[in-house]
Length: 204
Image 1 (cartoon, rainbow, N blue to C red):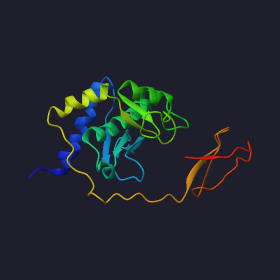
Image 2 (cartoon, rainbow, N blue to C red):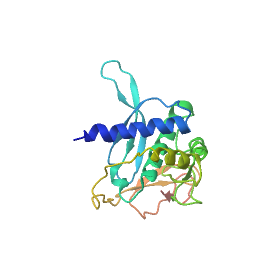
Image 3 (cartoon, rainbow, N blue to C red):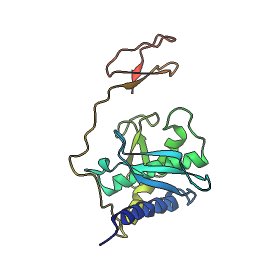
Image 4 (cartoon, rainbow, N blue to C red):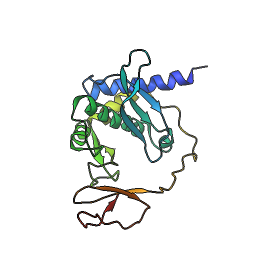
């Protein structure tokens, strides 16, 4: 019998290193890659999320949500891994974003490696903002590299059971003033007006 934990996590580490070499020039530092369920997210990046208990050294977290694997191809799942690697690249080698999690520098890096940022998941969506996904650029660097990896027999083996991922309705959503970018949180479909600019605030 295989060790499931070792087999699956070593596979994610293999993919991380492969795409680091093919798409990021081999510069990305080690991090902890985890499978973690987070509502409304296919994955996430968190800089310096862990600290060594002996030395105090810090490392980053890259997480993939196994609920989001259902109905998606291995290439799409690995696209999420590389999406988070682009965040890690910016954290260490770019200018860390101060507001929008997905800013212009991150978006340009994504596009350069074959993933097109979009807020809708389709062409024409916003490239920057708090909630931005991507689609795979046909014939781009990522697709080419992923096909090379799959040619070695690579595959993702485990996901959440089908039908187990249920998205909970949001009790509150974020609203932003289009003029001064002030934020507020309220129930969905609440009509808010910015007290400073008197503009109607827009929900995420």
